[in-house]
Each structure stands twice: as structure tokens, then as C-alpha cells.
Image 1 (tube, helix red, strand yellow):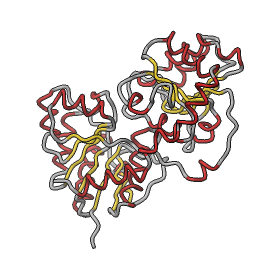
Image 2 (tube, rainbow, N blue to C red):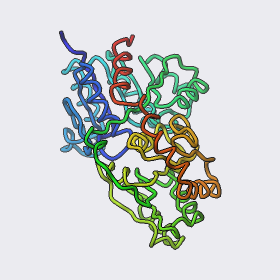
Image 3 (tube, one colour):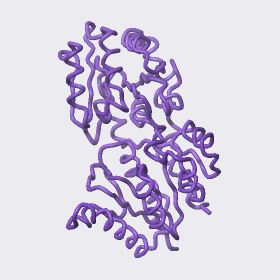
Image 4 (cartoon, rainbow, N blue to C red):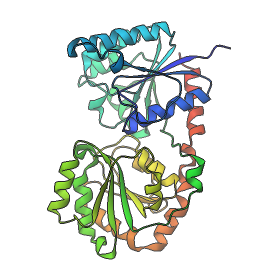
Length: 360
């Protein structure tokens, strides 16, 4: 029996939640008996993947800058045709209207699924509702990573092809078997992007909580363009002795397991995997109630704490609660793993399999 051929098109397979998802999706689809092709626009691969890889950046590297973009389109079309790709899953950011109209033409004759990874629609939709409907109305599926994103889509564009499929977590069995002693550490892990992650709120709340006088440290793990901004903010708040910065790691789990809790203070998200992975490893999470994702994962005072966004005072109080209230903390820690059992790789893979096998 011939396998259905699926191409996952993404910006890259390196350093980012959407990129990590694209890599995970290769394993989910291969296990579901699809033939998997990954097509990446930029030459950046950090995460493990399976199936065939077509690197548009490498394949067009001998071209001048402007012509390279054209060549990427030509190479993409040729690859789709030569490999008889039946289904395209587009996981890229899509914020240039002309480019997306051309890309949709390149994708012709295949069934198209677009993923919306963020509540910030500027990365995925043109400003015009008219053109948004032109781009997305007749595609096979518009896949949202949270219910809040699906609701916003339906409200704005009245599209009939939206469906929510949450991002899964995949943590190797040996990671669960390892034992770590919990330390007085509050951990953030993710991209160093102030506009999205709001490190100003995080650092100001940590400063106001004063839990560092009780031996707590804040660890920031990741990389991004705003590293210097973060360092300056730490210095301005006199937190140099209490905040440590660690480089991005493909496997953040040892640090996650040893943290007392992880923290997320974003202005907006999609479906933040740092929360899901933390809970799966038994580490409670303190998050702000941003759009979207945290409130669909965190049950307040059950597996973590969910506080009003942009409220430094309330966030600092919550930091102190998790640092000092052992009964609350132990209860959340005990409940954490079972609260994300519905997000295992197998469960989410079945949802993808059902979707792709029933596309029109």
C-alpha cells in the first residue's frame, strides 16, 4: 500500500516553539504511516527529525539575494511535483501578502493545511479581512494550536475550516526515570524576545518578591536578540547576584526537573510548550493569563498558578506563594503530570492522522 506523501513547510528546524513542533510532527506522521518530507526556508536545524529534508536555503545558496527568493519558489514547486506531494502542512509565519499569494499558487494541486501558532495574528494574516479570506477560505484546514485562537479566527473571519489541535510534548522515558533534587530555582526557558516574553515584567516581579533573600535564584535559559536588553534590566534592578543566564539547550529537561517552578510572563503566546513540558516532568508553573494557551493548560492552584497579566504586584505575590507555601506547592507538583496526559505524542498524533486521512 502506498503511503500518503506529506510535506511540512517551516521557517527552520531550529530554536523556537513552532520549529520544535515541526520537528515533532515528522515523528508523529511517520508513526501514523505517512511518507514525511520536511522543507525548510532557512538553513537552521537544531531539533531531531525523521523523513526527508529539503533545505531551500542550501539549495539556492549560489544565487544573489533577490534572485534567491525567486529560486526558492521555483525549487519548492519542483520538489512538490517531483515527489508527488499530496498534502502540505505550512507551519511558517506568513505576513507578506504578495509572497503568500505566490506560495498558494506554488502549492496548487495539493491539499493545504495552514497552522496558526500564535495569538498575534500579524504573523499569519494580512491586515485586510478580504485578503485573509482569499488566502484561507478554501484551504483544506486551518489548524489552531489553542481554542482561543480558533475562537478569534471564527469571530474575525467566519471561516468554516478551522480546527484546534494542541501541540504535544515528547519527553524520552529515561528523562522521567531520572531523579533530581529540587533547588531554590525559578526557571524561564525559551526565546529571549522582550516584545513577546516580557522580561521586564518577570524581572520587576522577581525583584519585588524579594525571594532571593531566602536563597532563591532566577535562571533564564535560551537565546535571542534581546540578551543585552535583559542584562541591562538585571543590572538596573541590582539583581546581578540573583539572576543567572544559561545558553539554549536542545534538552532543557534536567534544568526543568531541578527547578522549584517555571515561569512565563508573555504578552501573547500560542500554546506554550514550556508550560506543558514542565508539568509533564512534575514541575509546577506560574504563568500570566495571556492570550493564548496558559489558561487552557494551567488549572489555578491545581497544577500551577495563573495570575492577571501585566500586574507586577500580583505576580510578585504569586512568586512568594510558590516559594513559601509548601502545601500548595506540593499539591500542584503532585497533580502536574496527570494534568497534561491528554497531550502525549500518541494522543495528538492520532488527531493529526484522523485529520489528514479525512481531508477534502
